[in-house]
Each structure stands twice: as C-alpha cells, then as structure tokens.
Length: 380
Ligand code: CMC
Image (cartoon, rainbow, N blue to C red; front, top):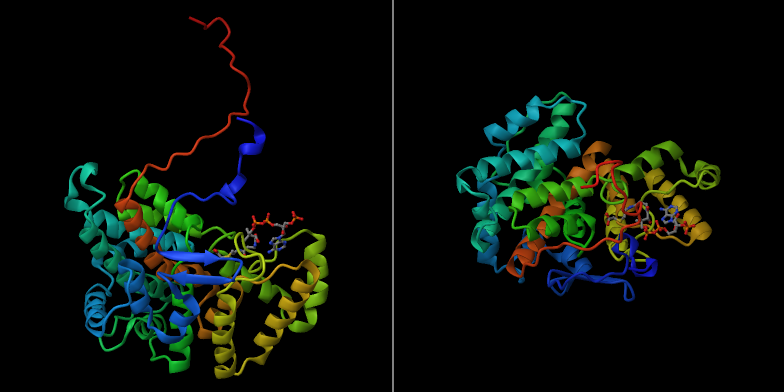
C-alpha cells in the first residue's frame, strides 16, 4: 500500500451512513434528524431532543410525558453507584469518576445477561438502557461536584424537568429560568455531532457486538481528551490564565510564539465557524446579563477577534460553553462531564443505529516497521 493512500486521523474519510444527524460545513448547518439544531435549541426541552435522536421524530405531548415519567424513575443515584463513587479519591478526575459510574451501572444491569453472546441486547432493551443512562447521569455529575466541594448529596425532585432538576441536584437551589434556559440550550447543542471521535469509538465497540454500556464507557474515554470534549475545560484554564481583556494581546503573542493550541478554536469539519457557536454565544450573553459579568463578555470577544484576525481560525462550541458553565457555577472540572450527560443521547442513538445495520469496524494498516527478520539461531 503506498503512503498516499493513508488518511491520517481518517480525515475526509466517509465511513458509513447515518440518519441521526447531518453536518454541512459549506452551509454551516447541523441537523438532528432533519431539524436545524438552532431551531431545536430555541424551542425544545432537552428531553424532546433526546426522544428525537433515539426515535427519529419529535415526541407528541403524550410521548414526551411518558419519557419524562420514565426519566424520573431512574434519576436517583443507586446504592452501588454511590458506593463506587465514594470509593474514589477526591482527586480523581470527574471524567474518570463518571466513566467508572457508567461501568458500574453496566455491570449491575448486565448482571443477568449470562454469556457475552447476549450482551448486545434487543433494540427495545437498548432503548431502555439509553433512557436509564441519560436519566442517571445528572445525579452522577452533580454528586461528583458536591463531593469535591465537601457538600451533601441532593436528591432529585420529581416536580422539576430534566434541566431544572439537574441544576437543583448540583446546587441545592431552584435555578432562575434564564439559567435553566441557557443550560437546556447547551445540552441540546452538545447532544449530537455525527462521527466525532467519541461517537465513532462507541460505534467501533458496538460493531464487535459488545454491550451499550461498554460502548458508552469507551466513548467517555475518547471524550476526555482536550482535542475533543476536554476543550471546554481547557478554555476556562486559558481564560483564567489571561485574566482580563487587557491582557489578551500580550498573552496571545506569547502563546502563539510558543506554538500553543488555543483551546476552543478550530474544528476538524467546520473551517469557517462552528454552526453551534452563535446559539451558545446568545445563551452566554443572557447569562452575562443575568449575573452582571460584562468582564466575561469583554474577554470572550477580545480573544475571539484577536485570534480570528491573526490565525483565521474560528471558535467551536466549547468556547462559549466553557464560560457559560462557569457563570452558572459549575467547577471547571465538571464541564466535560456535562458534555457526557448531553452527548450520551447522541452516542446511544448511534449505538442503536450501528447495531441495526452492523458490520465489524476493522480497518487496515500499512506496516512501516523493520523488514522480516529472524531470531538468531532460532529459525526452524
Ligand atoms: N490554536 C492554534 N492553532 C490551531 C488551532 C488552535 N486551536 N486549531 C488549529 N490550529 C492550526 C494548527 O496548529 C495547524 O497549523 P499548521 O498547519 O501550521 O501546523 C492548522 O491550524 C491545522 O490544525 P490541525 O490540528 O491539523 O487541524 P485538525 O482539523 O486536525 O484540528 C482540532 C482540529 C479541533 C483538533 C484543532 O483545531 C484543535 O486542536 N483545537 C483546539 C482544541 C479544541 O478546541 N477542541 C474542540 C473541538 S470541537 C468540540 C468537539 O467536537 O469535541
């Protein structure tokens, strides 16, 4: 195989069909099951978008009510998950904590499945597993943050919908509607993005007929990296390092001279701007006003305009979502776990799609190691 046939990072390679979402970099659009993501973020609760990703259609009022009832049933931390989290050192990275919790849920739920031959599950079982995981993740993420802050667990509230309850479990007070709305939008924008690294990892694992939980655990591992989900956490580190808008130019001179990557900018697919950014930036603006933090908006705009002017590289979703989550009150380390709670809907939609038309994903490699050789005196 010649060198030129290799597509490093699978860049530009179309691996399979998907009906879950469509990314169109030319028109700068992202559709979930045909609907523009901006439209969904402006009009829908996250629960309806989860339903859409799994089932292909937006729910009727009754279907939404049924999903909400089911979600409420699985909101509370189970004994095993809480015990597993409590065993971890407080210094454990929250991504490792969530990955471990999902692994425990899988081990408990798959307990009766016997042979690995039964692991992949029926479409009905996998839909149910998807709903349970999506329902369980907010408590895991919220409890993780509370534990690190030395605070007590807060039980879920049945009278609150997904986003309001998530914020309740994290902070122990009812969030303002402006905050709930911004948070809901972020969950929708993070929910799905075609064959990104973590979704592809989940599909690779599913293609071996492994179970849904194993695929999600693998996806979390892929999401942790700073070139993928870890970027929203990295954005805040950068913003804290810079401090204020006045320091942007000098900071950027130094960072670029050191050839540092500026987290929250650039994208493998979108080269002229990430279609999700304007919607999340609008949500960030509402938070800036709500919390009266014009300094955050100034730093945001200054770094964006300077970096775009110098490099022609545009922000991705992590750029506005990092400061948005920080204003809401989440610790920087909790940002990427929030991404998990959202993306689990997209991952599981892809896992079910992969399972429905499966082919083992097993690409080829071109060998470039030493030529065949033999152990001295050992040739038979
Ligand atoms: N800061 C500085 N330079 C950059 C950046 C950046 N954020 N992004 C790209 N470049 C430069 C890069 O150094 C390279 O320059 P050169 O050709 O001189 O070596 C050129 O642009 C092409 O970059 P690349 O890394 O080869 O392009 P890619 O398509 O492989 O990278 C990316 C996409 C997201 C990995 C990259 O833009 C990056 O590392 N960004 C920062 C991390 C980040 O924000 N990740 C979140 C991605 S979006 C959310 C998600 O889907 O998870």
